[in-house]
Image (spheres, rainbow, N blue to C red):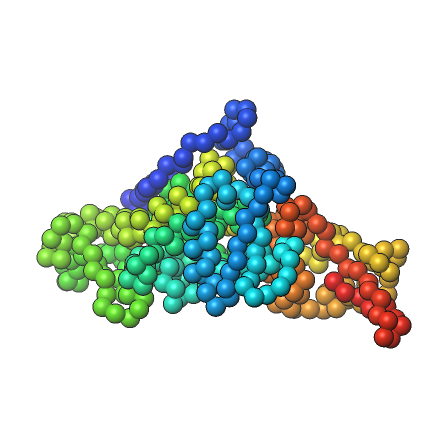
Length: 389
């Protein structure tokens, strides 16, 4: 990252060195490719880690009323080699075979639970256009077992990447950079804490800061509304005032603490879990913007792409898109709002977001690409055909 007097870079972790493939691969060359090209390379490499379905899978039984706790408990027990197997999700007391929909539902439900404010694992900032999540520095005050949960979160993210499942939550820019072992800079602070970023910029540009009565200590509000959590930036910092002479040191320590030191144990555990599933070297070919696309999928639904990757079965096979019922269907979809299309996608596939390659990358539970399909069924009561999706 370019540096100037307002920019400092911190990179707490370096990428783990792994075998990127059978032959030597120049990762910098891969990183210079277009997103689509590097994604195809990345998915091909991931397939080398994925255990074929006929060699076993992991079964996960979850109680809906204990969704997060059960998911954490089960996933935490698996060894790295188990995490490269396909999953079969079963909700306790609910009959059904996981053909892909239950797994997608599980990813969606766990994501919702992980990012709830009361869970205390992440905070949400409006610094990104859609609001983004960053690790909560006071997570330990909510959950004494929080580090184990961050290890689980890393594995959960890794499984989502391995299975090309979308996570309906955006991570902050600095957190995505840290996942890729990229340095974070002063400007990244705005994506985590806009007010702090604005105050530090003011502090940088103005004199007589001793009038502000600042000290080399900070406090974070506790997520459970208890007493604030206090930290000293240097030993005895609570008694050392900030002056014009030492404010530069204060700015650096403040920045480093907010983006690194305050969340270092949580971040370390999250990255360890992630890299157990997806090698860090493979992830390193993406930039932080592409990582968001990889994790969250395509946010908008392209109806043209949907049509082009749909197959018609039963009564609709012969006429395809020209059948009057199919024309009615697409007319209805085109008239829907964005939210209604997302709800339809969720209902039909179990997922509210698409893989980054769009509809052509939809998968069944065995990892095979499956086209979206519309099939007719025979309704004997009315002696007529109706369509189902």
